[in-house]
Amino acid sequence: MKHRRLHFLFQPINLKPMNIKKCIASIFLIAFYCTSHPSKALGVAAGPSVGIAGFYSSFDANIPGKDKITISNCAVPIGMFLMLDAFLYIRFDILFVPDWYKLPNDRDAKFFKHITVPITLGISLLDTIRPHCGIIFQKSFLDDDLSNKINFVKEYKEHATGYLLGVGLDLGNFLIDLDFKGSFSSIPKSNINHLEDYNPKQIILKVGYNLVGLMKG
Image (cartoon, rainbow, N blue to C red; front, side):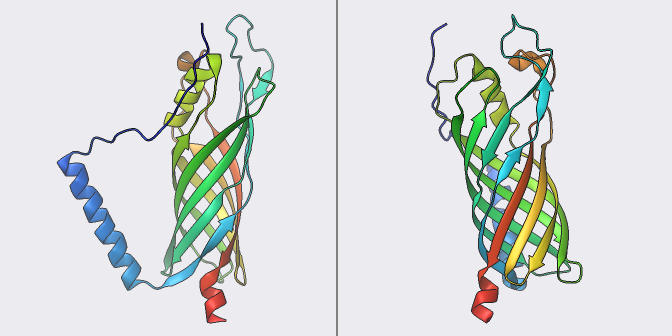
């Protein structure tokens, strides 16, 4: 089987009239909310992200996986965030994520790139602690010779969108957030020639700086 080079680019989106109406309505709803609720925080955020998912499997069908193999990665989300002030705060992030993955049975790390948009809803306790939960959308840009790992990467892209559970800590103008990211569904083992299903998981630490607080100061 010849090696193929994959080019993952934006795919054309088939927008139906009903979907267009929903998108327009959502934009107006967000715009109205932003104008009626002052910003609590607006600034920059960055920090490390580490993969913690593991599975009992092997990419080589001829070698049964008897030991636990971990797909490890180290990423650095970098971007902007906006928090809107209300009884329940809502936070939007737009992050660019350089990501280094180490796949099983592969000596070399692969470099991927993502755009992620976490949207979280939470409550501020004593203006310091912020438990929150939400969803995270991800668009991946993958361009690598992945050989027999093609199915895995394709499936991983389709399961990148997931949920967030975490807690934040406000220290002056600094906002620290520690989140657990999980996928809504697992990648079926039959689709990637594994002995077990695979569910991507992440631990994400973000440190943000509130530019609104800086301007007020």
